[in-house]
Image 1: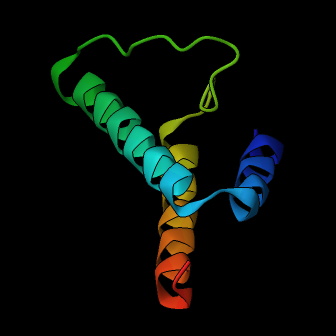
Image 2 (image 1 turned 135 degrees about the horizontal axis):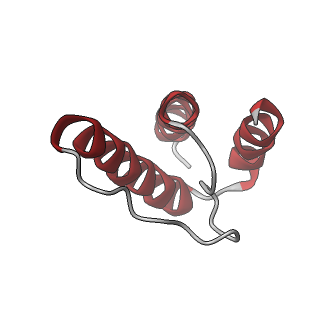
Length: 80
C-alpha cells in the first residue's frame, strides 16, 4: 500500500489550495472514524473502490495528513 500513498502524495503537487483543504478535511474525518471504531467499537464506514482512501489504514492516513498539511502551509507561504 505504500506505493498508493506515495502516488497520492505525488498527486498533491497538482492540487489547488481549495482541493488540498478538501483532502485535509476528508482525511481528518476518516481518521476520526478510525479512532471512534477503536475507541467505541463503531463500524467504520465502507468506501467504494474508486475513493481516494480506499483500503488505507490509519497509519497511512496519518502519513497523508502530514503531507497534506505541509502542502497547505507551503501554498500559504507562497501566496497561492
